[in-house]
Length: 413
Image (cartoon, rainbow, N blue to C red):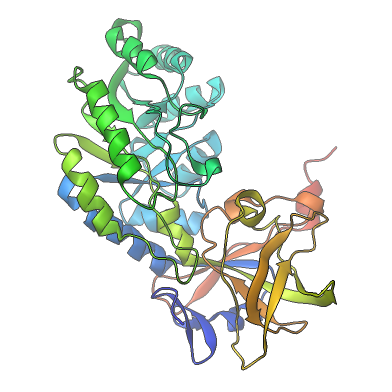
């Protein structure tokens, strides 16, 4: 069984590049995240090549996974960073990103975050509120920094065919600015003498399985900015889809780009992919704690939960779950659940899979994006360690140790 070139089953063992996942897991406490830096590098390079016809500049969206080893790998590849908080900016700078290669986005930037970003020399600001322009101008004025590069985030009122929680371009979303607000800002640049409003940002959601909504949003965007030659940059955000099911068919990245690219000629193009770069490079490894049969159902209670991976509880998201060591075991329909005291703490429902025993280890697949980044300490659970397999595919290291109870209480009075 092959999930991708870095994560696959060979001779009945789940491998991450050249290493058996079970061999790594035996040396560590579970749950534990594992990432293939080789796969992340390949995903980034593929996207860079696909968008070469329009010369796109790629800023990796750190919110998907801000593990420092992942950030360093992508920065070394030439990626910029898309940050949506002061914390992500700090992480990017610590990982070696140049300030001018960072885009600061987000619908609710604080005045303090804006001032700090301006002082640090952040290269682009994606603006989503009219008052934010004033805050930026004041921050730049206070230190004499001239002509900050600003992109106005446009809400094109286009509904993407995706989960409602990750659809961001429809009229009822909190994101972006209306046509009127953008027109007001562009018609009165004298109000913001320290800003260069030279870009438009249009990101309509994640897991976009076709180009239809993107093309609709692009058409509205180009109509809006056609009268403003100072707008020379279009930032498309991300949204490129990832297959979470083994049998899921998606259009190729190259096909999507071939449909979008003709509408971008003449503009500088920025991208902010996250999920498409890291999702299929990561797994979450868990151990079966208990096997329970009741009400005609089989439950595998594992030591991973919604605190490590909230996507199934939050989005009803599907993740394939496979044993680390394959065996000719009976197939059963099972519920894979965590130990957290919530009925929503379910990782898989009515899933046909091998019959497991207490102590067996499983991998929750395609967990590299929005897994550890959204992890919590609910139930006072310590967040897991993160392991990275080096680009050479043959060695691994702990990039982030497992938290301890002391870590959880250090900030308490």
